[in-house]
Every structure is written in structure tokens, then in C-alpha cells.
Image (cartoon, rainbow, N blue to C red; front, side, top):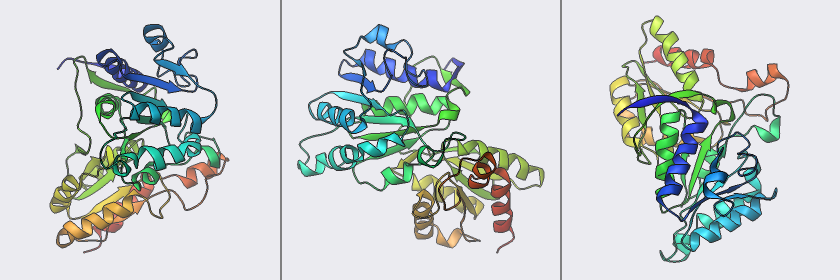
Length: 328
């Protein structure tokens, strides 16, 4: 397919625009998505094409407009609910967790909720403790929700289109610091299946697993490790729930070691479930304990030096890999 380099925000916009042109039932709702063209300019120009009937500005009331979206989805529409940040979505968790996620089972399979909740997650500089949290593992803990977290424009477009077409509620995670990132995206339409991880770098010494903007750290660490003759295989999870256990197991069968890199608190995070699944399905192939690199188990501070101390980095990944290599 012919490709061109476009920014992350444009890839997301193209996904929404193409699906709204394809299906009249798809609409976008959120704070500043219409008149202001989106807080991060993801929805730029969409109001002009689709009008205020399908690109809807909302009050600062996440619980309210998330609830409107859930109700619309229950009645046959396909809403895209944009949160300016997933930190604000905490106010809407009742609708996401208690309504969207549970409606199919509570209605004995009679009522689907085809809705996408999307927006940026995790840290984005000096935003303080209340605006810097990762929510992928929070949402992945809820049966009935699908959870996607993307790291590049190609995946962003292909997976958002799949999420919009899915008949189940999908939580879609981006990053404020990646909206300007450039990436190759096909001119032609394409979809990426939900639930399939991507091996972004082949290797045989250790498997490094990550998602979202931490993939940049994973690849930078793999570059440095290669200078020492340690060739890491790097896997982008892309989908947190359902988790592609098969790809993870197949990689560990080859490398015999795993390091999980995640911008989240260590307790009860995505790496905990991955570790359980690998011990269940690939225990005999592991030559060393699974290592994890996470944030510190504290709230993030505002001072830039403390932000850096809080976050995972390349040196921490390299240290985890090398400590794994020396264990047999």
C-alpha cells in the first residue's frame, strides 16, 4: 500500500472521519471537540464537515456526557467520547464501569454498547499528581471492556477504526506528548485487529514488552543493548484486554527471558497479569525471573527532577535486562 508520513493527531482524525463518512450512526462528543477543533487539534475541521449534530461540544461534565454516550449506544448509535485526559474520566467511571461494561451481561445479551472512550493517559511533563496517571490497568480489570493503548500513528488509525466498528465498549488510550509524532500511514483503508500484539523488533536474547509512549524507551534500550551484543525482541502489546498471550509465549520460547516496561504503578498493573500468564503457559522456557520496570510506587511530583526519577527510563530497562541475563 502507498504510505505517507502524517502526525499522530491526523491519523486519529482520519480514523474518525472515515468511520463517520462510512456510518451515519457514528458521532463525536466531548469538551472543545467542535468549535475549538479539539484540545489537541485531533478533531480539526470535523465540525465543518459533519455539523454540530455529529460533532458535539459538551459542558465540563464527564459523568454527564459519558452517560449520554452510553444511552445513545444502547439505542443503536456508535458514539466516540473524547476525554481531554483520562484523568478527568475518573468522574465518568460510573458510566464506563457500571453501565457500558455491564449492560450486555445484565441484559442477557440483548443490549450491546458499541462506544469508544478515547483520550490521552499517563504523564505529559509537569502536570502534577492528579493529571499524570495511567489508566490502562484500571480499565483492563473490568470484564466487558476492551482496552487499547497505541504507540504510533499507524496503529492509532487502524485500531481506532476497529474500535469504532466493534460492538463492545472500548477504552482507547493515547498520549499528549505523541500527538505531533510522525509515522508512515497507508493512503488506503486498513484495519488492525483488536487483541493482536506486534513484534516490532526481532531478537533472541530477551523479550522487552511495553505499550504506548514507553515503546520509545523500549526501542532506545534495545539499541543500546545491541551495542553489547544483547539482541532484544521488542513487543508492542497494542491491546491490553484482550491480551495476546500467544505472541508473548512464543517470544519467550525463543528468548527465555522477559522484561516488562510500563508507565504505571507496580502494584496490580498490566505486568502482573503478563507475569501470571507467562508462568502459566511458558514456565519451563524461562531461564530467569521476569523483570519489570515501572514508575515508583508514589504519586508523581511536580518538580522536573522528581518527574524523571518517577518515570521508567532507558538505563532502568538496560539494568533490568542485564540482571536477567546474568541469572540462569
